[in-house]
Image 1: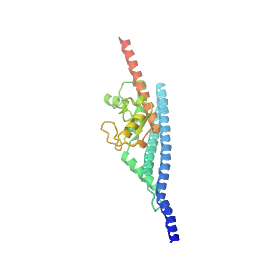
Image 2: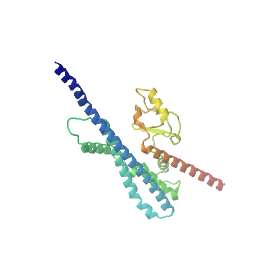
Image 3: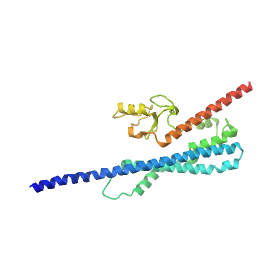
Length: 264
């Protein structure tokens, strides 16, 4: 009887250990997925920096009327945009697998899982690199060197105004504080709805509105989770790009004002 009781006691830790294995395996996959996502975000960041450098080079070449060299930069820009999109799909696919993976009895073919998720995301997006916002901004930056204020060939003036002031950031001001995102001291972005906030106010908001803290942006139905409201690697670059565009617009306005004074 004593021996039987001892066996029962010994079997309890074994059962507990077996039950914890799937959870431990899923946690390891989630950790590895988070690391890979971070690596892809860093790569996307470097691609975006490269696009900014190429745009600056193209503007200088256009200013020096080296039009053939400017044209040669077109294909590299499109190739980088395709690479950036693919990195984004891969990062999203890895994140989705990491969050939903459950360890089973059979070996998992992660390669097939990743390919399937990647192809699904790419098919849902079906993006055209030439319609990409960054490509439009590249073309407009070059065009504006000698044709500032004029519509690009084949496009109406209204369309040019819309695209030249367009930003990839979903909201221009924090929905809680009302501050412009370019002035936020510690900006964060929801990984789900992509809205941007000041970190401390949104974290307090999530705590006080638990368990269903809906995004405070008007009309947004998403429920926020604190661990998914982060300063992702692209956010600071996108905010800096917005600052640069705002500065360029102010500069153009000042030049226009001085021109009007000269005319008077």
